[in-house]
Length: 118
Image 1 (tube, rainbow, N blue to C red):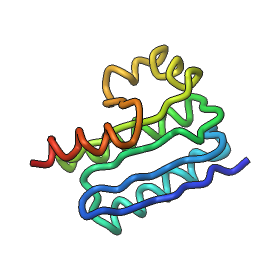
Image 2: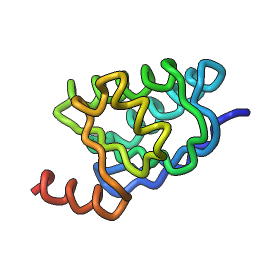
Image 3: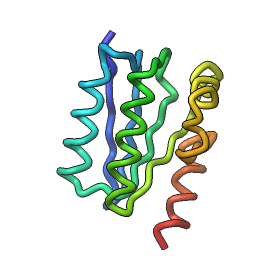
Image 4: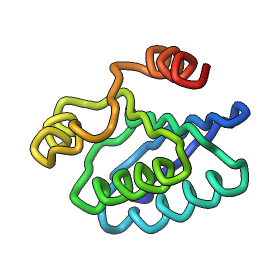
């Protein structure tokens, strides 16, 4: 199953919501789509809403880590929201939860970004 990506751009902030399985089959598509959107809109802050992700493997973690590095190198920030319990466990096992900020929901993440962007 291919991952569907919905993006919403608000100035220097983009919210990307993913639906489907973020595995090795979908990783390149997600990576390319997010990078094109980030570059085209000059996104500095990315909220990645994973509420619709039903499965993720190490390739999915690689996509997230890569977007974190890309934004961090441009003085930006990546925030993850709406993790299911299995995906949250994967973040904990990989240690990614120590690197990337994770919030319970989109509204909390937006509020946190507003504080950072001041």
